[in-house]
Each structure stands twice: as structure tokens, then as C-alpha cells.
Length: 76
Image (tube, rainbow, N blue to C red; front, side, top):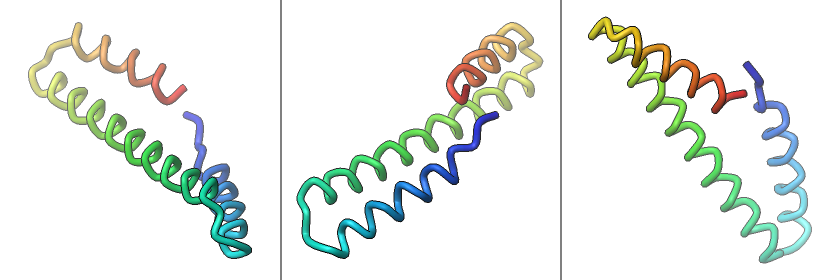
């Protein structure tokens, strides 16, 4: 499983430094896009986990296998 946390922290720091120097519309846009991307990513991760748990509860092996493959590709 890839961990993009350190990359995201570095990018956030670079953007913060740029914003502190001046009010740059591009930097504000970049920050907004990063927040949206991270929120969407977290939403999809949680949705996959929820659906995988539901497949386990229903003992639906086929759905479980399908969702875990999709999940691995998504985080891959």
C-alpha cells in the first residue's frame, strides 16, 4: 500500500510558503484543488472499506473479491 502522506505534507508546506510570500491566485487554486483531491480520495477509500465490510457480512465471496481488486487498483 502506497503512503502519499509525506508527499502531501511536503506539497502543503511548499504551498503554504508560497502563500505567505504573496497572495497568489494560482497558489489559492492549487490549495483548493489539493483539498478537493484529498477529500475525494478519502471518500472513495471509506466507501470501498464499507462495501467490502458489507460483502463480508453477507458472505458474498464474489463481490468481496471484486471490491478488493478494485480497492487495490485504486490505492495502487
